[in-house]
Length: 263
Image (cartoon, rainbow, N blue to C red; front, side, top):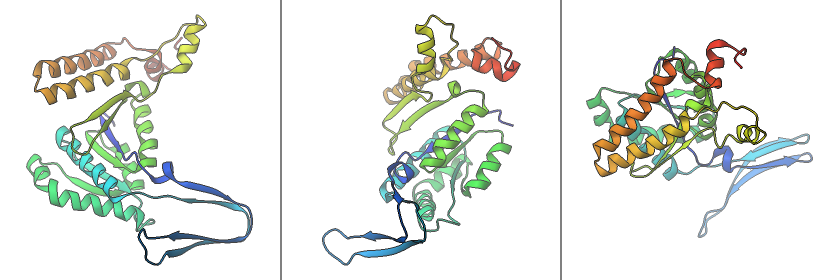
């Protein structure tokens, strides 16, 4: 059903990616303690009573980081003119994921509701499982705000759903919208380069690398009020799309159309 782009907003801070994970070697009680800076009584929570070896993990996030992520997502959705959806599992993680839901709602009501209404676009919180199902049904043209791990997974799902990681741009945006970094999401394609060094033929999709440059140039044009630069970036992107739609493409896309018989 995807006929238009989908933007995944990934909160690239905290959660599993800055977690402390440990191996539990024996029976015993696992507790979690917070010690206030500057004094005050520590708070301790019972996590689990282990009756055998296992594993455990402690993770965290910050209100200011979540708030900055929310502002970036709302600004991006406004710029695109697309609806914004935040996905969490707040029915299970009532406090942790609930904090994401509450901060997004606070930022929306305070700073963005009137702007969204003026553009006739919506913001909505959805459970992650419901959002995944909905995303598969919808045609695209929406911004999906995800926690760190969810964004890591769903961005690759969306990229492959459109045919290839070579079609996905990756853009890092600051909350105030004044600084951005664009890169090709697939990395350096080392495997292809090693094959090239051996003298073997390769078919590497350059589109994500081209779009990393065009997104950066278009942003520079926006900051400098340079419509000619913006037009150049948009034209280059359109030409890339037109070439693929005309039937000229790299192997990763050809396989999606013609199957694994492509050489």
